[in-house]
Amino acid sequence: MEDKTSPFKVILGSSSIARRKILAEMGYEFTLMSADIDEKGIRKETPEELVIALAEAKAEAILHRLPIGDYIKEAEPTLLITSDQVVVYEGAVREKPANEKEAREYIKGYSSGHAATVGSVLVTNLKTGFRKGEWDRVEIYFHEIPDEVIEKLIEEGTVLHVAGGLLIEHPLIKPYVKQVVGTTDSVMGLPKALTEKLIKEAL
Image (tube, rainbow, N blue to C red; front, side, top):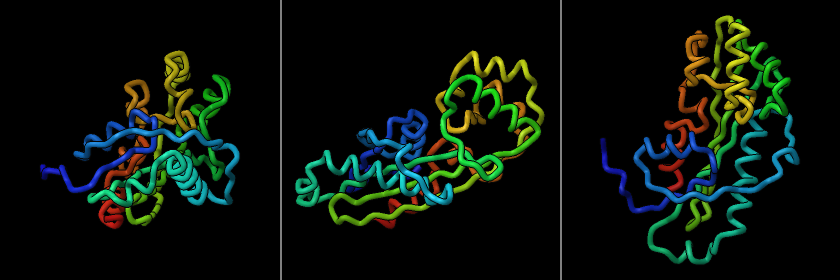
């Protein structure tokens, strides 16, 4: 593996444990900042536009808290990475389930069916002001998911905290994932190839 101790710094603008893990797997060292935004206040026509707008709103919120002048003066650039993700099911955007009842409905819908994740990555170079974002879409097909598995998932609780109540790496659900068209890292919140590409462009 190539050495990524490179002449730039990275801030991950997210509190997601999965995104943190993926960025670390990519070999980057980074600091964390989370953006407190009203996600419900942002609405767009398509899921693709929505996730880009949310990643931009997160970047803006974090930028307001940073001493930008200091970053401009520094020799090496600092890159801020923000991202967002939604689940799309039958054309409708799904965010985190409101309660157990909704989580149950969501997962029953995936049984023998399919859903997609649409995720965005936005990289902002704090030194130059360069900013670019793109989105990535992954299609996920499921076998039939038995009711008792759905109940176990809800009892266990993780599904209540993820967009669309959708998990594919969870040991309870993994056996019922038929096909993933795209990459697992993208489903988990940060597409590695896209992030790598945007980092290169931002430098």
